[in-house]
Image (tube, rainbow, N blue to C red; front, top):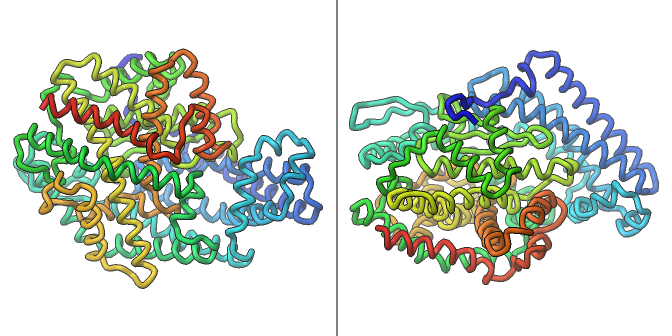
Length: 590
């Protein structure tokens, strides 16, 4: 792999030449045809007596729709997330939403029909295709118990594009198009919000401070549409959860996450026990920066005098090389992703902030980055490529079998992060080790401490939204309270981030509680890595098999393959103890 020739923008032309191409138009027509075929299969099944053959046809046609939609929607999403001002792509996205409306209704109709079946009798017929979807079908059967009437579900689907989806799109478009003037020490500069947030990683505290105040001012000026979006989405989720018979949005989220309340309580309880240790880390970092106390804008500041520049090219090579120490398959995969331009690297105007990985077709993904020259960004690159590797392992499965909950979707990403972190700690200088260790703890702190604050915030908003809409000021206060509960004396209480609810797109998804699964993924991944280090010889194939099965069983069942009890606080404490050891090492280095 030649680092000097790495592409910096992801390739979309290999998916479709452009939105106006005959290939894209044909795919859209084919997608509509597949939806019609699915509808015919569902209607035929409803008129029948409920045989395995009927069920097989329903599953096959549903998988056909999901397969093509991943490609069509993935292509359009690539265009929008790198340029939200692309009006043609926005129009294509809206058209596809309308195209999928019948499919969403039919999927609900299919789930309701599956709920009427005697699955034990169906499985006894011995239909191989149907029996391979046993877990999927049992989830559908349970979900059918939480459906409104067919008319109500149809109405909810029709309202979705102009309801929650529209509010989510508004948040994304407003946020990505913000241009903010920041008073830097070198003079005023106008930058997109993604570049402004990247300044939180700047070694100059005055740059970080200026960016922090400019960001708060920007969200303050745009708080009305953000609060309207939050109120509308959370209000809709509350109503729909109640109408579908869920005790709360959290109960519905746990069902989607394939875990139970006992597992969540064990994990969150262990996390709370660890907060004093993370505050030790934050206070040690403050000492390393020669500060009395960290402000929120210091959380991502670099620590240590690493000689390694960690530019994208050297970072990509490091990731590929270290992946290869785990397996040639993983190393080859990383090199392929760089060579074939799966990664969109740097911030740019109208590009979405943050990072994500999106599967686009069998074994092939696209990774969005907003890369900053730091080990933290290199770690994020490894994280997202872990998701892509997970997609590769899932490729032999059908689309329905690939439906992986977020809890398990983070497994490979955390594992890959850990691989490169351990390698960097083993090979780096003392200065490098301090930088890398701090960057790792920075990420762990976000996933354990900050994620808990996000969970508490969302829980508070859902509860209060039952009574009425909340003002932007009230949302800010709920966020501040959540940060005080979690960060405690690790941060200066005068410099928290009241508008983190506006900055994070995760809150604006109808699939609520887009937070605790990250913690599950981190700690589950660390637990698996510890097992790998104890017995690496027989781990690789077992691990790939686990990744290929994340849509075939719940988290507790999959964990048992490696002797993991997800309902025991002891397991979560064991993973957190690995982080505590790193905190001890950091304190000594500081």
